[in-house]
Length: 102
Image (tube, rainbow, N blue to C red):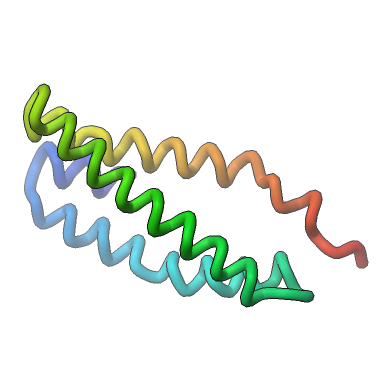
């Protein structure tokens, strides 16, 4: 979040650092999904990748629309907003109800 905001305000080089920090999250996410759904991890990963593709298309549409209506600066500020939304979703931890009991 911080590197994204710094990239928008100070220098675009911070956006590169932001991407490098987010890059390992894909592999960690796939492993996490495999642990949440131990009986059928392939289905969990397929669902996650499908939802991810839909969200990427939606994000590109929204950023394009906001760019046309209000400008690129406003559209780029949507990045930190969606990062905060992602963080809040992770804080809720809905997967705890699916976790196997020891």
